[in-house]
View (cartoon, rainbow, N blue to C red):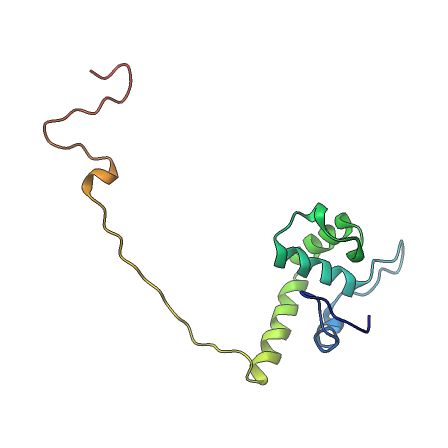
Length: 129
């Protein structure tokens, strides 16, 4: 897949790093759809948040892409890919391991928690009087 790389798709360099980690084609049965095309479809789905059924046809049948996504999530393929990307990025100085923590305090009046105020009754239904 040489040529123009679309938004949310793997570059040739990224593909070269992760291709060896992907499962081999099955020995028996039908050949799988091209791994790179499927990964690009998965990346498109995750980046856009669109429903699987709305996936552009250039990534193949949406059901095929979805099933491969489920299989790779379950069998640890994505964990291996993430590990490879993290190691490569860390070695190249591309990963910033600093952690930022944001905290906020939100205060609410005691009535916001549903507590009763003194001297009032809160009817909870027809049986309350």
